[in-house]
Image (cartoon, rainbow, N blue to C red; front, side, top):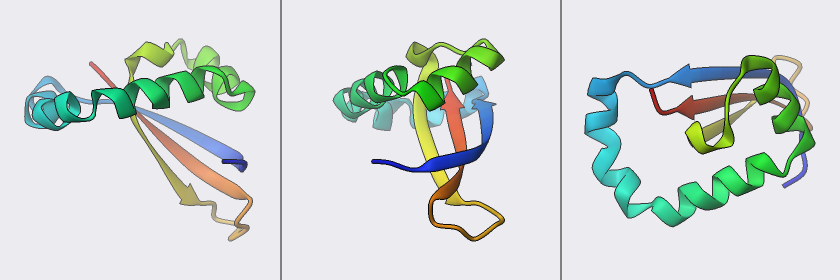
Length: 83
């Protein structure tokens, strides 16, 4: 997937939320591993995560949303992290 991102938001899930999503994460372990590998190999994600001190191994999900500009090439990215 090729896109531009103009804003990254990092969200560390709280332990009680992690308890709720743990069964789904167990089912999607290979998907999460592929997501982590893709994020780790992306210069755009790498730079954003490095500036926040976040490791790819902490990522359990990502959400892309249209930017305020409305341009389909620009996205807001929310990265969900283990606590």
